[in-house]
Image 1 (spheres, helix red, strand yellow):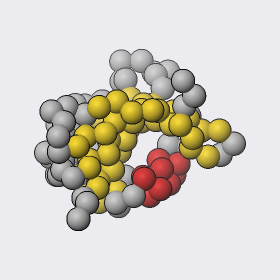
Image 2 (spheres, one colour; image 1 turned 90 degrees about the vertical axis):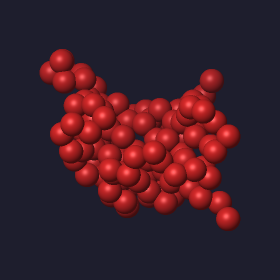
Image 3 (cartoon, rainbow, N blue to C red; image 1 turned 30 degrees about the vertical axis):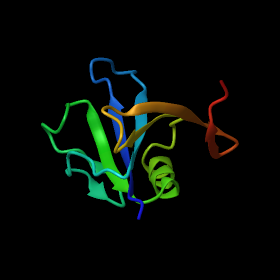
Length: 111
C-alpha cells in the first residue's frame, strides 16, 4: 500500500510590501510528514510560531489535483510552484520540476 500526502506551503517575505507570494508542494511518498500541524483537505492560515513567521497558509492533501485546486482558490495570482519529493529513502526532500501556469493549467516547467 502506497502512502501519499501533498503538503502545500504558501509563504511571503514580510520585509517587502511588494514581495511576491511563494508556493511550494512537497510530495511525501511512503512517509508521514514529521509535523502534523497543517489542516487536511484545505489551506488554512498558519498558526503564529509555526515553522517560520513567513508561512501564510498550509495544508495537506490526498491528491495533487486537490492541492492545485486549493492553491488556485487561495492564491489566484500564483504563476509558479516549487515542487519537492520526499520518500522514505531520502534524508531530505529532493527538488522536482516546478509547475507553471499556462493557459489556466499547471504544467511542468520547461528546462
